[in-house]
Image 1: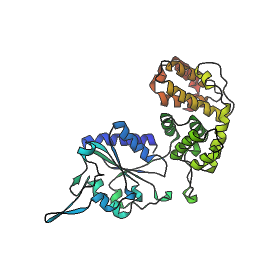
Image 2: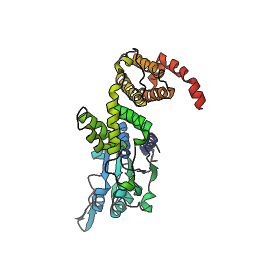
Image 3: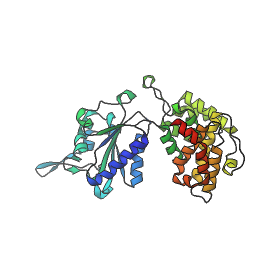
Image 4: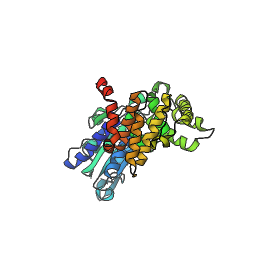
Length: 347
């Protein structure tokens, strides 16, 4: 399931806790696809705390607590890491990450916590939801088969990579437009992981963020190629370096934004580069007084692509980035009319 759909599901699960309808959710997926980031985004959107417990690093007593004598009885201390309404707030997210990497003795200790929302005398506050995530057994990580009693305590969703969702996220996080353009040009490299070859560095949504950081640190140096290969692997790193070098031939983005005459480059890679750069400039202009003019000039430029599908991609990314204000721009109707036959043909 694509990340944007997973995000919608987790958002509804969080909201349903207030009505008592929440069911614990298990997210499955290979390393680096953004499972943890999706959960963190839900916490950020609702302004609630996120308690991230890495079960792979815990002992059973870390969850159950340590027994101590109280008179003639033995009681259990409550681990401070578990959510408490007074200390953490009435609502939040308890995230059990790396649950498939936890030894069976630890996952067994989590049974009652997940199903009954309690451990002995401890109870999870009503406003808190329980999410978990882990790698699949074929992903070459340290994983244990999830026992059936534990699996039956969750609803299960598999997180898949989706380029449009990643591009939306990348623009919102100010990822280098050259990385976005490269992955539009080579979408098959957004995630390329072959567990049979146990690669050290490989392309994934997480490692492309590292490539973005490498560009900020090593751009214009002799170390850039090595730095990119260290992030996403040798083949993808070298391709990105070549792509970045070619971006020097892009047309003047400022001229396009200003509505001046600017040629559309012949190379498809450069066209992707222009599209990504224009969306980024539109985002930066969203809160300025000239946003309408900027959007309009980008829409006019979108009509000039020899391959109209490229213009459609540009406007689609632009709409996802800036939202409904794009529809109010006078040039939008002109652009929409220019691709009417294309849309009718595709449908």
